[in-house]
Amino acid sequence: MTSVSIRDLTLKFGAFEVLKSLNLDVAQGEFLVLLGPSGCGKSTLLNCIAGLLDITDGQIMISGRNVTWEEPKDRGIGMVFQSYALYPQMTVEKNLSFGLKVAKVPADKIREKVSRAAEILQIEALLKRKPAELSGGQRQRVAIGRALVRDVDVFLFDEPLSNLDAKLRSELRVEIKRLHHSLKNTMIYVTHDQIEALTLADRIAIMKGGVIQQLDDPMTIYNKPKNRFVAGFIGSPSMNFIKGRLEERGGVLHFVTPGAAFPVSGYAAQKPLQAGREVVLGVRPEHIKVNDDIPAGVESHEAIVDIEEPMGADNLLWLKHAGHIMSVRTGGTRRFTPGEPVRLGFDMAVASLFDAETEDRI
Image 1 (cartoon, rainbow, N blue to C red):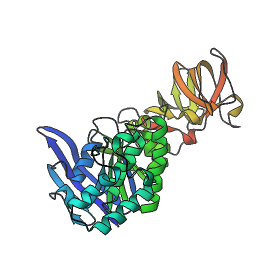
Image 2: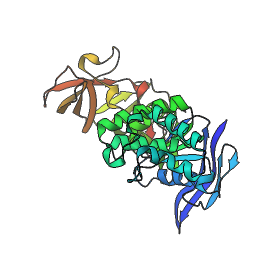
Image 3: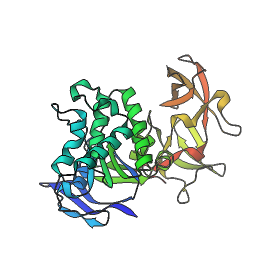
Image 4: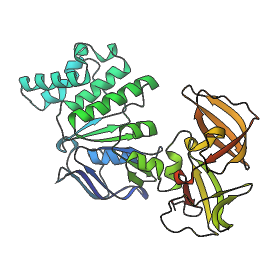
């Protein structure tokens, strides 16, 4: 069953088109993440769904009901913002119950809903405190709880963790995922953080310039990006890109760049590859193997270590190869010295090829 359905949604500010005939279906109980750089339209789209912005054209359906022109309070949504937006003079308990009191919900129901939200979010001990007495993570839990007590079908999150430090972000990511597994409500979550997207989402919609570039599950997006923008946006450090062309050598099709050539026979192309085509080869750092880690039968090439970045569980190597600087992820127990020669290789089956002109995956 579809929970949120968007049809031909267009939003213009004057002559500037922010969202462009956008179509999107979110399944009941799905966790969808809107991901993209600043200015791509992800928060704008969320605000359109919430009713905080009037759209120029198109339709928004929530639970089968056309809510395109309904007020936010009538759409059956709960929203969590980047800023906590708590009432500083009220206790946590009163912050959670305030909206219910305004809606004239019976007092016993209010106590039941507040108690349930506090238990789920593990903030029972904080109910008598005021926001000034809470940490950033505790304040965000309260903000989530304020949406939770409304008992709605769809929750909207607008970069809720961006004001927190790295440790708190990691902890609350786990809490939000646990919350989704528990409630099984539809959740639409906006972020520019790819780690949040990959760890939380059932599906990710990657946006650029008001257009969804790819909508798929995290592993498909990571391993088979639809275009070069998606490939470069997902992954840290970014995918390595090398410009070249396809040439036939000894009866075998190769990707050829000055100083190197790689056979592409293991690559699963969407259509038959043809010699003479200008392409861009993309390889993720963890898919490049060094020295003894190179699988048997994989062609290897010489490279020089530029710098090494020890990261605990693994190391990040920056190698000079055929006039390019390539990032390579290796095991954390191995150490390399700048200037040291190494051999590198990779399996073309896990690589990506993009058309040099359109930048689409081929």
